[in-house]
Image 1 (cartoon, rainbow, N blue to C red):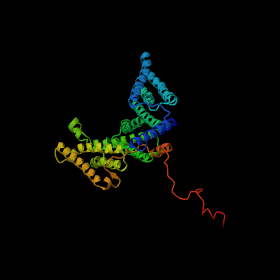
Image 2 (image 1 turned 120 degrees about the vertical axis):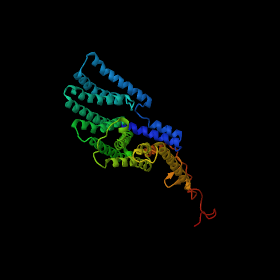
Image 3 (image 1 turned 135 degrees about the vertical axis):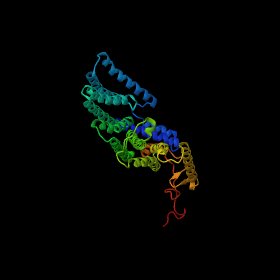
Image 4 (image 1 turned 30 degrees about the horizontal axis):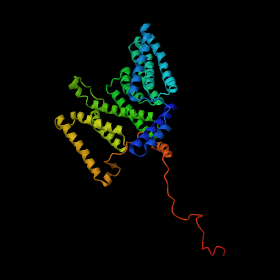
Length: 401
């Protein structure tokens, strides 16, 4: 990540940590205000709504600037390629040099839109002229454009720590096996899905290993890794779930499914559809990870809905009602069990709400920032011998030995 963002994110994270400590009652409002003043970010920040508006305005403005000469001069494929080749580095230079380094903007939406459009226009510059090269050459050119989008999204994620670029990289990665299969004319219809499953598994494992050392990572990287991990988990779940339940498309769309690549793939995908929510929920509880907890809850609900086509005991409404009552009873029982323990807790678990789990691992840095600002405690000296406070012996014996 660029040094400007890394330093700015450290300052922002310390200020936000101090604010959370103030809300929890650990530090006073005066101490939190002094920390905010001392660690004031040197970058310009905007709220999320202004960020969205600036991003949309920049996207429309750049598209208009590209379309204006194209309409005036009636450019064709070659002219469109030249315009994209001109505007792609121009957008990247304006975003990186003028807005980030010059104006010191911090994720304001404008520089993100410019950088994403630079990657998109570079991919279009490769794909547009292939329109007249023949069907095979056009498919290969669009595959190259796909790879450019994937590489550009990864580069933006590494350099700037943009979570949106990380999400775009995951979408490009998910579509790559199907694009490659279309270009190479793979005969096995389920081979791209198997390749997709392997790619997403590698991406999820890599992101999880990188998040182990999240305390030493900038906040933008943590967001990006969280996005990659969650997108990979969701992609794996959708891949195995839709593959296992491909028979329902016969009823809904009249589509006739083909035979599976392996005879045991149906049972394997059904098993993963049931196991993945449980694993995500267990990891979320064990590591206090809210994203995995929410993924486990949502995927468990989807599994209850979709597994009915393989394992069912009655009507869907009855099964959902029974499952909801079971989950509600389990939650109520766990709360009662935790409250009945010594000091209303059982081991490391408690029914009482605790502090918000730290996301960036900067408690030590925030403590080092707050500690010099805290008033020094007055410690009374212990009673004992005080030098110079009196004389030995009586007054008559002062001059004799």
